Amino acid sequence: MSLLEVADLRIRYARQGRLRATLRREPHDFEAVSGVSFQIDAGQTLGLVGESGSGKSTIARTLIGLKKPTSGSIRFEGQEISAASNREWSRLRRQMSMMWQDPVGSLSPRLTVGSLVTEPLRIHGRKGDRAEAERLLGLVGLPAEFISRYPHQLSGGQARRVGVARALALDPKLLIADEPTAGLDMSVQGEVLNLLNDVQKRTRVAVLVITHNLNLVRHVTDRMAIMYLGRFVEEGPTARIFEHARHPYTEALLSANPEPDPDARGDRVTLAGEVPSPVNRPSGCDFHPRCPWARPDCSVRVPERYPEGGRSHRCLFPL
Image: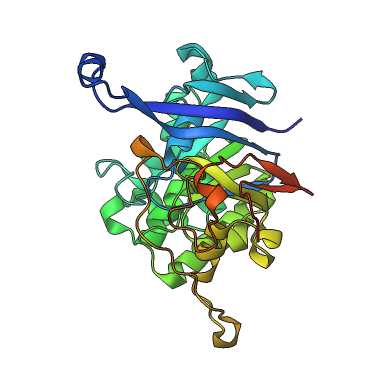
């Protein structure tokens, strides 16, 4: 049994009031996440990759109970949690933790580092003393002297480490990391990558990484899923997807990823136009208006999910 199992998850947002929609004869809402399925085992890392607006953060907010799904199943340790009560979520949030995108802005400027990392313990009625603060800071490689510092006294990398320590305070089984390297320079990004790998080896926590940073995905994830307009267009083992993408959108993302070795660079795949709005999805395949390999059928037929030896894709004419 997997730690987290998501099946056919659909999430809709209202775009206008029902009365206005009725008078204008327009849809009341739109589907931001459309039929997403995945699973994460204990100690495994899954990366969700896609452009802004693809639905990655919406999935994260739904997994921790900040957004109710429209339909679909979310099972955590075998228990259905898609319609969990507030009391049930109080218990579940001890086992799920979130690292927010802004490493400094997500920390209260009024609290010291020691108070910040032990606050989750106090909220859930557990002891959060100095010894526990030192243990948590040691887990992420920060000395005990940081306990008395305030967020404005931290660098971006140090603030991110504090965020990781805070997220691990309750010994969660699932850690959701939303853009963990956002706003950090390259050297600090490398420190964060090593930190996540080290923490996972020591704690066996499962990690869901939400990012557009493909270098992060390559170095810390076991599996990856590529999102486009709220759907997974490709999913599978990270190494296999980097070796051979099956979906044209994945190929375009990988071709645009910076390579440190000039001899390893291939031809960049350029996509035409902009990402369509989920309010007005294209007919047929969502990606066909921008796809350099599109054929007439692509504008008519909606690709199904095609399983393929431990991975899957949604393309009528895979690469």
